[in-house]
Image (cartoon, rainbow, N blue to C red; front, side):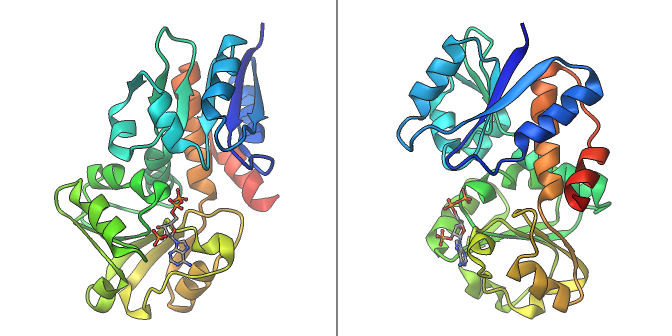
Length: 266
Ligand code: ATR
């Protein structure tokens, strides 16, 4: 029987994960079927219970269920624990296992696809929601020199920073000083056509501006481009987090280059 996987979210109709995993399966000769599940906001546990009971082997989890998935799991990876969120469920074990591949997906996209050195770099992370939480630990593990988290609600950034040693957190007023080699936008501002209030002065010469939102030029990226920064949207992170999930489920790392190219150039 074909092994079944799903992406669980609400809304989930726009998700590119079924297409990406179908491409990975084809490239690696794996026999899998990957669909979508859209439970109501309070229906996550029931939906996963039913999918697992029907033989479902694993799932990706997207907004707004990553924290619910974290609570659902009987066992968690260290990186899921650090993130406080789960985007990858392994359902075919005695105990449901949860992992988080978002951070490693971002770091891989930066280092491998974009050729960006992280070690020794000054990094600014915008936002303190689920998307930001998932990437702090992996950025620290890549040995960045400095990591500052700023958020519209300063207390949220302070709370996030305080969970890690050597990370500074606060409101946008922290940006009156300091310049950064890498600025990662993990806010949802771009989805609403808005831009986090980053001053032009924070972009170091040759800086890379990265927006986790994918498939569009956000106001943040437009602004960064105007400051002569290199820019990237989050398409590569999307593909790399998917590849890491595929590796966890299938024991084989799929090639990502052709998938990324196809998504970028339609
Ligand atoms: P996610 O899981 O996608 O991170 P979230 O937990 O709702 O979703 O967090 C959204 C993030 O985007 C938050 O950091 C939010 O700032 P607040 O914590 O102050 O709400 C940030 N955000 C959303 N719209 C924004 C805007 N227009 N300008 C700046 N930050 C914004």
